[in-house]
Image 1 (cartoon, helix red, strand yellow):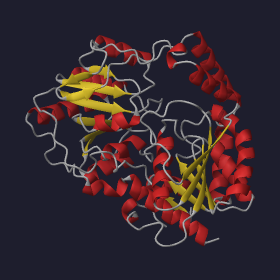
Image 2 (image 1 turned 45 degrees about the vertical axis):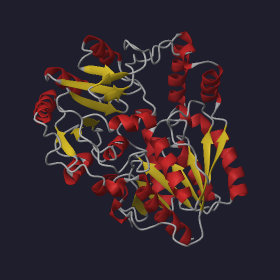
Image 3 (image 1 turned 60 degrees about the vertical axis):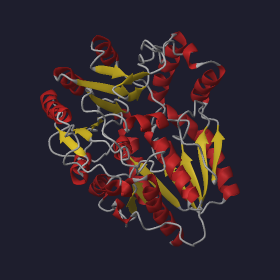
Image 4 (image 1 turned 120 degrees about the vertical axis):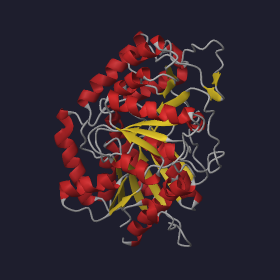
Length: 462
């Protein structure tokens, strides 16, 4: 059983017959979610190893700007996503986004063409989207549907996906089927493939039963998770701590492999030595990612406002209104970039002084964005959610990639003041190891090799 990325250098394909893999993935480009990026990269890397990858995914519409395109050897089979998601996709294709979202991406910088500060090529400032009446109506429709559908609105895809799944199983005859969770819908479809006699690997990522699971669905989530652990031929998780959690719940998980999230080592300039940004400039922080009830930015923002000479840049598409108001009031210290396309964001991560990572409430979860940060070659400030180091904090310390601090405003402010002082003295990276070599085991190619070993072992055991 491969439980750490240290064995990722063991190839997964060798000279053996390439595998034919059917991936069931609701989250797949043009979705920009972390799970979508995970399998966009893993699928492409597995195809580069010679494997044949088929993807069953919904036709959700949306822009592919900045997202990894499916490469040679990756065959995407789109299906109807269900009535509500299809309506959203129809509106997105029929009209520009601004017709549904009245002020999405509004540029507030003077030039309107971007902003350059201290050598940083920053995107224009963006106000958070303000929905018109059509957008608000669709938002209410989504919320109402999520009360009725398990696990949420994405559950409406299960019926059309099941029909397409049986057709693809007959046509493709895959060596192994992989379910990409979330949503839990993909796991239910994987169980269907297993009942048909196909080998099945469940890429669980986060647990099905998590702290954020709505109370009304906790029973169904627990039952499904137990069935997956019991019936899957192999389980993939993203962190050793997640595997330990499943062992606590079920006693043993004999067929499991840790396949972490990763970073794109093939990105232009990846692996090259990165010049430190100008220490004479204000300290530029970047937070990239979403905000949830279990990942809240208020203490971070308050700490930034309390320390002079620092600016926090936030690249996120779901900024709460209080944060937008704070950015308007303190424009020199808090700057909203809106949703930055993935490839542009990778470049921006390499240009700022410090990358900020907010911990999830569950200490076993390592945010996928953290692994992306590893490829940027910049120091990382990891803000803890509770007492003691979590899985991410342990990695930050082991790799010498940055610092971890408590999640209270005072703790963050003290750490920011210390970092700002190091920056002013030109010693920001002193004592850190920002070279590409130590983080190579967390590249997408390394993760794909680990996944390939697991997939081949499953097929060999048939």
